[in-house]
Structures are given as structure tokens and as C-alpha cells.
Image (tube, rainbow, N blue to C red; front, side, top):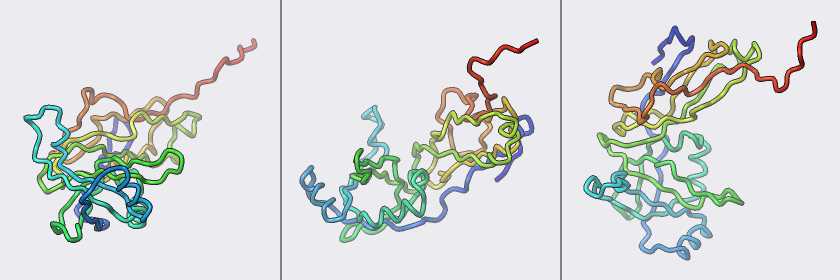
Length: 232
């Protein structure tokens, strides 16, 4: 859905909710845990993973939902292929089918945004998922993608593009989570901004921000450090 915001001279689009699934993630249960077990799994080309209900993270114990926690492993080649296809920023806001072999069959899950990597090699060490059953309220960071930079009049005049927020956090039913939010900046001039409240999303989505008047991007004028004095 596109909407033209006349005052801001920009077009804001939210991608459709994930009504389809890119891949089915194959996993097998782990009976044992620990650093040695995880190291052995990684040496065999597998990635340790855990999936649970997001309500388990609630600070107030009375608000926590049943964890449904399952300890799993997934194939490294499969996860790399999925990340390459879906692209890493959107992997964290995309739903997938999960098939647990010799387990409880197939369910739907959402990656919670936690991919633990080795700082030196960049290899994926662990994956953290949360269940995303239809109707389940989840908190999720949705990536913001900016388009139209090559046609932006403010940039052509010498301004520069400043990203203030690269993602926005929402609470919404799992089936209405958009994979990304696209902002067309092709008509922004110098000093124009796009604000959080300009983003139109599904009515069930609640923006988790204390100040929705905060900008997510702007075209700033070029700042010249120590300009030379004008000679008369």
C-alpha cells in the first residue's frame, strides 16, 4: 500500500505481512546441552538453536506465558542458504515453518533477531527463535529500507542523507508482521524529514515508541567545517 505524504514529499510503504514462508527450517532435538555438546555440533556442520515463547522474556513473572522451550540443532548449510536468499536484515522479521524431525511435527516460528556470531571468523554460533503462532502478540524490530536516493533532489543539491532509525519496534499479531518498511525518499528536499508517525501500518500494529514525532531520516545540508571568509 502506498500513501503520498504531501507535506513531506515522500512515499511510505509497508511490505505485506508474511502470508507465505520462504523456507522450512529442518531441525532435530538436542537431548543434552553445554559448551562441549555445542562445540561438537558445530564441528559436525550444525548450529545449536533454541525456540521458546516470547512471553518467557517478560520481566514480571506473572505475565510470563508457558515457555514451550525446545533445544534444537540446524544444518549450517541450510541456514546460510536461507540467510542468503532472504537477506540478513529481513531474516529477523520473517516467519518460517519449522519441522522438527523425530519431534512434534511442524509449527510456525519467528526469528527473534538473535544470531550469535564469532567476532573473529563471523561464523554463526547459535540461533534464537520464538514461536509465532497465528494470533500471538509479538514484539519485533522491523527493518526500514530507504529507496529513491539516486533521484532525491536534496542530495542533488549537495545535501547528505542521514539515517536516524534503521528499524522500528512494533507489537502486533504474528500474522501481520511486515518483513520490512520501505520509505521512498526520492522527493525529499534539504531539511525534509520522515517521522515515525508518518509510517502507515496494519491497524493491529502498535509502534513501541514514547515519541512518535521522532524522525527516522532526514536530508541535512552539507556542513562545511571552518569555511573561508568571504572576500569583499
